[in-house]
Image (tube, rainbow, N blue to C red):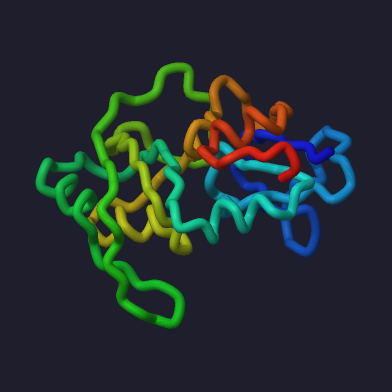
Length: 199
């Protein structure tokens, strides 16, 4: 029987168990079952929801499926974001991707939000007196550092990036470094993937 976990990945931690330089998932105070691995990644300066599982098929089901999956992020950026800039982000902006190629991002959901209440501390260092905005961005694609590149190209460099959900799987009240296990059937249901009982 495979196991499935939701982790609030802390700031300044790599989304891997071995082979990196810096803090890694194996340093968390949890006895992971053999074969546990992360699904997708968050860079070390990003925080929030990370899926861990012993089921190697999940990566293929999520990332090679014809049906894109939604990922939502809370993003703090420098300066106040105008309605015009929100429109640009929503319809698509040109970023540089692997191979030094220009790429126009797929239309996505972007909205201004109030600063989250009871937001757990992060590792970012910024001056509170500098104007900033909080955005909620929902993507169905995930190019390398995509959100950071998107906000930078429109003149609003990212200060903090927190993934809050992947489809119906939500970060909820998990604190940084905390993890919870989720039953297999519920896991696939919340991801919107057909569950056969023998995934």
